[in-house]
Image (cartoon, rainbow, N blue to C red; front, side, top):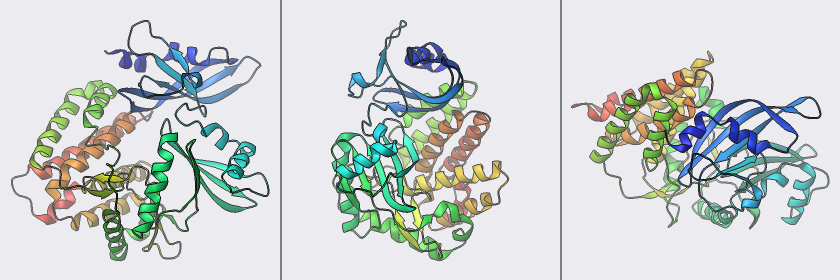
Length: 414
């Protein structure tokens, strides 16, 4: 077991060292995520703490073994006696890669930030953290006086100008993304609030709509026409070796099966070389697609384009279908009828796919990436991960079958 795997299996001493001197004592912890980080791993833990002053609280603690450049004064550096790279530790929201995050999560400080951006408020805003990916980005909804004032996106400082330029390029191509109202070089962007609601919340209404599928096809064609010269952020296919190793560690009893499905993935990718690159979203799923409140078959917005750029044109369809598989499993696990809607929508998208064989390895890679997230997701995580591995195996069987009519492409669906 390498030193990162040993840390993942036995994190208590590192977590205790991260909290030393804070007036808090570690009681319990639960792993909630593992991601690649500059050649190492970024591990997130939900922790329960006893306070020296009495009472208890919960926190989110991160251990990072990567080597990305960072101001080490913003983290606690832990040296491991068993060797390996030092561990950088921090407690949310003190993310060393997102220096604007702490202020953006405190109403009074956020008001100062907004004023500096040229968007002063009459009063103190209400803040809602909608998403947080450690070391990468966070999105905070800002309301004041009961009105939406936009969204603060917090990113690594060196990416702020890049993301602002991406939004301009997408708007120039008439892709309905939010306008960047202001941005700063410390990694803060203020985005306008778009109308609409995530398509994922209206899946029962859109799953049988040819009009929605036409809109989705049109949206992807618009994205492909965006004039952009830089590569998209690496996705599941590009990072497949890391996902293979991490999934084997997360499911040691299933490591042989995991290795076998990744070997099949390699053979499938070799049979279907990557087509000429186009502009892609890279993280396309129904929570990123906004639809009209009253007419959910009409797409009115596309959000979170930070990962966009030139890439494999199959990646958006593969990513979208993998997310639908995850959504179907989630709804089924919770006894919700929307599971059938997610499956039906996946089948409808695949019925329009011209090359189900060529799509198969890209879909499988995305399903396996989701399997890792499921395996690290706590109770019943292994079961959910195995279901997604089975979906990936099913996708690869489409490519491996000697004969398969296009009408059988629905086998790619969960």
